[in-house]
Image 1 (cartoon, rainbow, N blue to C red):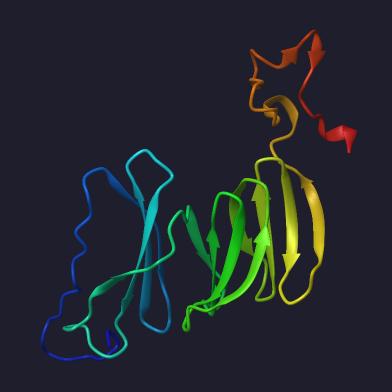
Image 2 (spheres, rainbow, N blue to C red; image 1 turned 45 degrees about the vertical axis):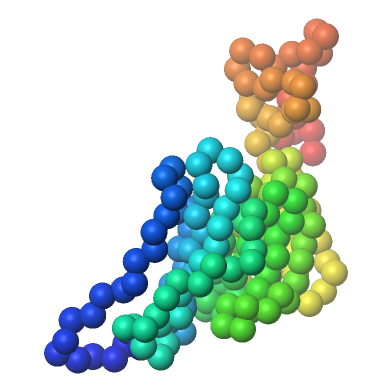
Length: 177
């Protein structure tokens, strides 16, 4: 693999991306497997590639994965698991075997972070929750985007200039909790 040292220089294989594509996330695991999420243009469409460098760098090739619509990936602290963030859920996979371990539905998740190996924080458009793997427990941590730039219905516009509707304030103030 890559960890093998020799006098000969080696180069990684290239990945030819379509015009306008953007690399959104890269995870390079301790097991010498690289995972890349690529967003296609200005849409929410995405492609995911994996590159296995364990056996040999010279014969390694990027493999297109069947997962589409992944917005971003986040590895666990020891990179034994990886969280795939979709528009409506977060899927946890074993990083080495690429097998699904958990799936958490969440309305419009924006960020995900592992708190430790068995718990993760999912921050969505309207709420932040802590989820525990292997148990069906959800702990509410707070509302997202509170105060002046709070969340609002899709038809509403929230912000410093448009935070009123029908003469009523539509923002959520943190003291309301």
